[in-house]
Amino acid sequence: MESAADITLVVDAIAAEEGLAAFAAKAARTHPGLASLTQSVRVRGDAHALFLRRALVGLEAAGTSRAESVPRTEQAARAKLVLLVRRAERARLAECLASESGALARVLVSMSASHAAAGSLMTGTSAGPRR
Amino acid sequence: MNRIEALQDCLGAEHAALFGYGALGGVLAGVPRGEPDLERARSSYAAHSALRDALTELISTKGAQPTAAAPAYHLPFALADGNSCRRLARLLERRAASVFGLAVAATVEQDRVLVATALMECVLREVAWGGVAEPFPAIPEL
Image (cartoon, rainbow over all chains, first blue to last red; front, top):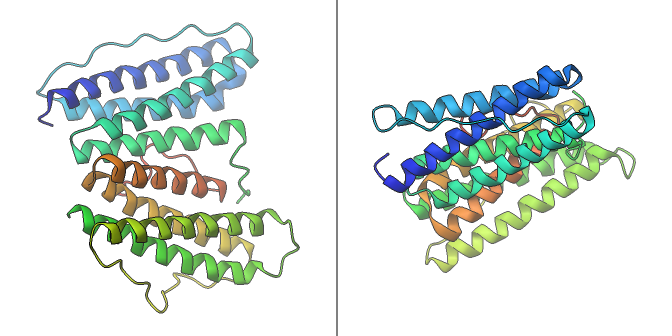
């Protein structure tokens, strides 16, 4: 990765993915009933952040992230989780389109698609058959 | 891989996907109208058909000859029932998404918008056919 703009973009993406994972972990502690949902979000967010951090090794330290507050009710927490996943989907896609590096664009669109798929499963919009 | 080659690969993937959906549509044709698998196969076929047409037009406007479909494609396994049809549909979407992923890396601006959007739709269709949400879809090596 040679472009300063791409490095900034990756730093932002790391913070966002870590923030999403941190929110999922916090939501799981507050609302154990959401454990299965939050677990998959946390795993994806951690995997994305780890991959991006490795891409930055030797270039610049990524910033830190902070988890958003978790709503008191399980229903509201679930809704916020879906909202944050949808937000991550849109942000990674926008970063993909803005990326100067083709290789980085490929990874970012994959991350966006991953969030899109998760969002559709969380909201039941995929209506997929059971295997 | 240059931009035109990447778009040609995408068109090739769409030809293959359409052949596959045609084959599984033949198996599903016997199920009652309104059955989710049949409706999903129809909408998937229509989406891939529209994408094939868009890619054909895009490649033509860039002065290249769009890749033609092969007369037939090898199906990786026999289609005997709904389960094998769903499995094939997931495979078709996964393969197409991988090709679009490579094209995302090789394109810029509006071309990248087209292939990135197509990739997202493939991944969503794979999930709709019973696939799982993986951390890095469309990148087989991750």
